Amino acid sequence: MVCQKGEVMGSKGEATRERILAAAEALILAKGYAGMTLEDILGETGLTKGAFFHHFKGKAELARAVVERYAEADFRLFEEMSARADRLADDPYERVMVFLRLFEDFLDGLGKPFPGCVFASYTYESRQFGPEVHSYIRERLGAWIGQYEAKLEALIATRAPTRPVTARALAEMIVTLVEGGFVMANAFGDATWLQRQSAQYRAYLELLFRPDGAGTAVSGDRDAPQSRSPSG
Amino acid sequence: MVCQKGEVMGSKGEATRERILAAAEALILAKGYAGMTLEDILGETGLTKGAFFHHFKGKAELARAVVERYAEADFRLFEEMSARADRLADDPYERVMVFLRLFEDFLDGLGKPFPGCVFASYTYESRQFGPEVHSYIRERLGAWIGQYEAKLEALIATRAPTRPVTARALAEMIVTLVEGGFVMANAFGDATWLQRQSAQYRAYLELLFRPDGAGTAVSGDRDAPQSRSPSG
DNA sequence: CTTGACATACCGACCGGTCTGTTTTATCCA
DNA sequence: TGGATAAAACAGACCGGTCGGTATGTCAAG
Image (cartoon, rainbow over all chains, first blue to last red; front, top):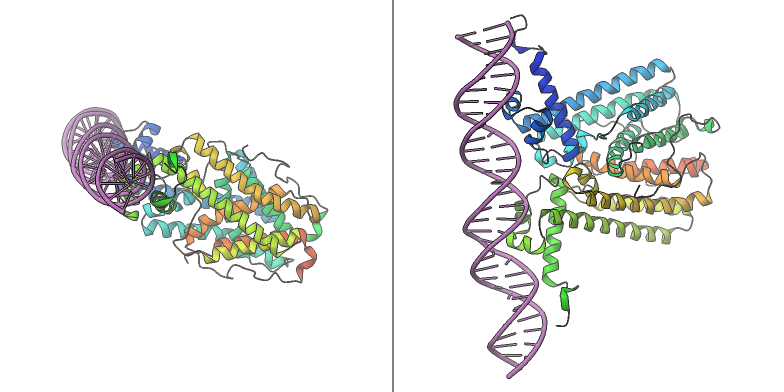
């Protein structure tokens, strides 16, 4: 055997496993973990029970695999976008701003069914999962905040904010806005919600780190519509 | 019959119904709607199946009643706090700031088990509920945003912001921060998370509407700890 | 001829909901 | 005033369907 012990030998099995994970993630985001049935997954993937239990010990292991896959993809997406932003700008302030715009552009490209956050979905069903999954989510959320914190740390190191503030606090704020943004976007069926929050956050950063640039209009601004019907 | 047709004759039945609703809300926040079992409710309230189905047609009706109760309580809480803030200050800017501080103080008083938002919990299980529940949540979220919008509208009418911004956008932002704050607070088991977001939001408003007051330290500021371990 | 990758029939537990019975409470009339 | 009476407020056994999980089998590839 060329690749012994079933290492990273992609082939058919891995593809099927990936299909199951992708379907499960979408279902968890739409119906919640407890609301998702194995039958749902089988119907979505066209597989049968035998196939599912060949790849996963059970629903609990699937739950762990889904959140791990999600966390890894999120982490990589951030790193990639961060690298792109750093290539497009040298100044730490501009790097943060460009990163946020890249993030907003990325969200623009996301079609519906509008995605949510697996972390948040799990959080509201926390009792379903053991403490190990809970602490794993906590760790990955912490890592996510840390990614933002690093970029903001570089910013604060070069520019004194107009008001005392920590990189940690600002990092927590944008992550909170993203999590809340997913909830609101889903509730209103409005895919632009999250982008608007990111734009407001950029405005906050601008006032903190470039208060003189008030005249220089922030290009690509996403203001909320002047009047929005609550039921729209 | 003095009170015909079982009108608003509180007494015993209503109290039991209220106990069921309170238990169900806590369970939905902890385990999600689908993860919550009728047995859970019966165990929590010490009742039996007969009692439950005497008060509710089924789990679906309970779900609707829970979210309606939650929405009404939230609405009333806002109105009450808003009235208190308006009594404590005359200036629209100060009224918003005082309101936010009252909100933070209120959150301080909340003991664990740390609450979440029923709207958000339902949002991540949206497929479980019919479109009528979904649109109801949308309407109530819209009303909530509208409450904030009215206060911020008065603020913008009296003070020109340092940067063009709409009351609607700012209202959406604070609501988004609250929703995301519940998620993060639950994930990290950190009851102060939401208060810190509110404080950051106040800082944003200060920069928007009182940029000269930089020297005047905002009393009762809640900054994030300088270094937070991601796993803490 | 072993092993991975599926398919299928089936099981047992659980869960939402029903049915019937019992207790308590409120109301009305002699 | 008090007992009849009806309705509300419960209790608890039971049922049918669903869901997670298992056991067994097939089939192709190496």
